[in-house]
Amino acid sequence: MKKSYDKLIYLGATLLVAILMSVYADGQSTKTTRNSTESGATTTGILKGLVSSKSEKVSVPLQLNGIDTDEYYISGAPDTVDITLTGSSALVTAAKNTKTFKSMQT
Image 1 (cartoon, helix red, strand yellow):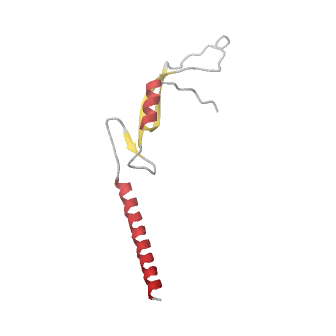
Image 2: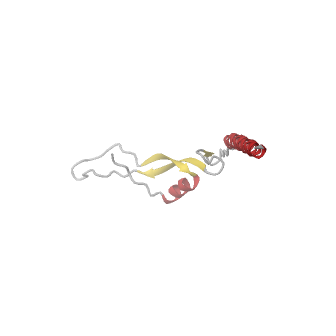
Image 3: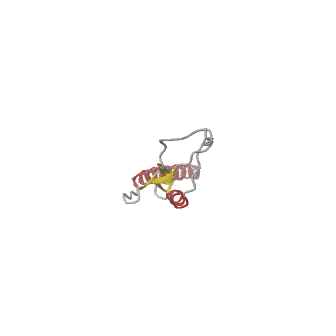
């Protein structure tokens, strides 16, 4: 009977240590941030210390689609528009370099 109590004590102690380690690790992950004012990169999400998020403005030429230019004359539309790209650092950099943007029609 003594051995069964020892097993329960060890099990309870192990569970307590696991919970404390989990709470400690969660507290440490919220303190881990990477900010770069130069590139505008910040961290977000569950993997706070591993994945950086970036927000960057890009100027792209305006393309007017779906308008019959033979029938209508368009004036006052700017040549370029500024858009803000937000996402993971790698995807934002790739989108900025390729500049392959398409309009979303809803």
